[in-house]
Length: 239
Image (cartoon, rainbow, N blue to C red; front, side, top):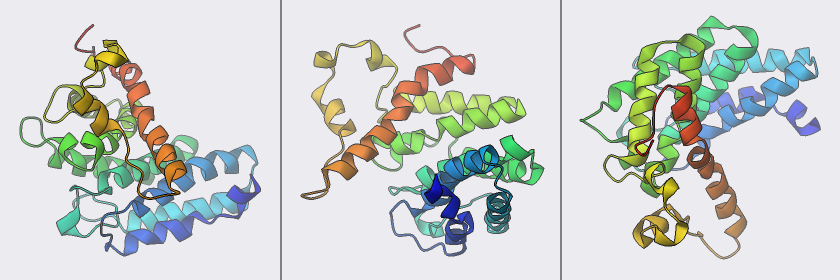
């Protein structure tokens, strides 16, 4: 808790001033900071921290581009094989966390513009979300959580429909990891090619913990996909 109070979210928000990322995941830092700082600040009634968070939100919104993008990747590397969309997810979650606590309409509007950017990129039948990033698109498709939260906040059918598209990307389309279909398959019967693709590969000796943490974080979308689908009124292919 003391560490949360000492972190300044504005430090991470300034990352979006410099779109020079080559393929890593620094774009997640501000959103992850928000997911701990926001509930802590309101639980502890920490007005100083609230002010820092508010300043960071303004910084993030100030760096939003005309097409809705918020991130630190150069244009030619966006929505490609790196962790750009993974970072977009956490930015969405950060903006929505602040809006949920404060009702900040500017934060919600920025989240909608960022979602709109993604929706313009990934149109059903034209481009697969699961062909971006790594691990068969699982990190990119985990943006599903943020899209469902945005649907909950606004009630706009466009976000529900985009969530349905992402569920298909997780199960039916392109190189999908087939999370819903294979949920009913005994582990021993899952094709080895799919299991291998979903299994993180340790980078180097001594990095097992890092790889394990990353796998756990990405697996959240695996466990929550059926619940998220039901909350949007969608049914799994086997239901």
